[in-house]
Every structure is written in C-alpha cells, then in structure tokens.
Image (cartoon, rainbow, N blue to C red; front, side, top):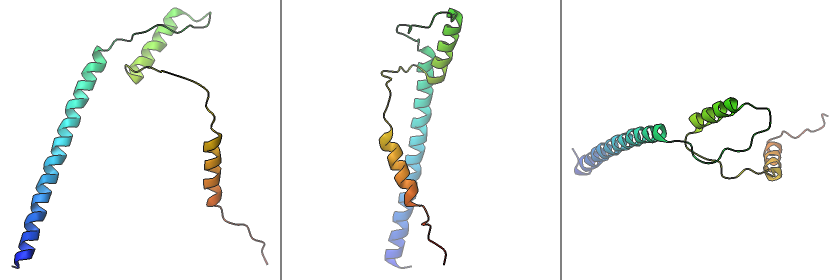
Length: 108
C-alpha cells in the first residue's frame, strides 16, 4: 500500500476516535448538569412578594395558579413586562412574503 494512503487512513482513524470521545464527554456533561438542575429545582422555593390580585378571586385560587406557574417554569422570575411595538417585524414579514409572490401578468 502507498505510504501517503496509509498515513491518511491512520489520521482518519484517530480523528474518528477523538470525535467519539468528545461526543461521549459531552453526553456525560449533559446528563450530570441535567441531574444537578433537577435537584436544584426541587429544592428551590418561590420567593418575593405576591402581586396584587383583583377583588373577588379567592386566595386559594391565586395560590394554586402561582404553584402551577412555578412548577411549569421553575425558579425564574419575570423582570419586566411592557407593551411592544412590532411594526418593524410585521413590515419585515410582509417584505419577505411579497418577495416570493408570483407576479401577476395579463394573459394575452
């Protein structure tokens, strides 16, 4: 067999082994961090003040909804809510859609 061909096969084999080792290492890191996050989420307790609620809503309902939201999103908190102006995105979307439109030409 030719010397350069043999050398290239060796390099290719080493690259395969290294790629597999890196893939296994990444998989292990994902598993470990996933278990750590699950453990931290189970220990987390909601903190902060309760937001004002409209009159007439029972406290038990507010507590149940708050617990459901906490269970769904975990120990995160919303920092800011404000109305947004989406005019730039709707203009961009319209430009994208019209760029693909078939031109209507009169039939002869």
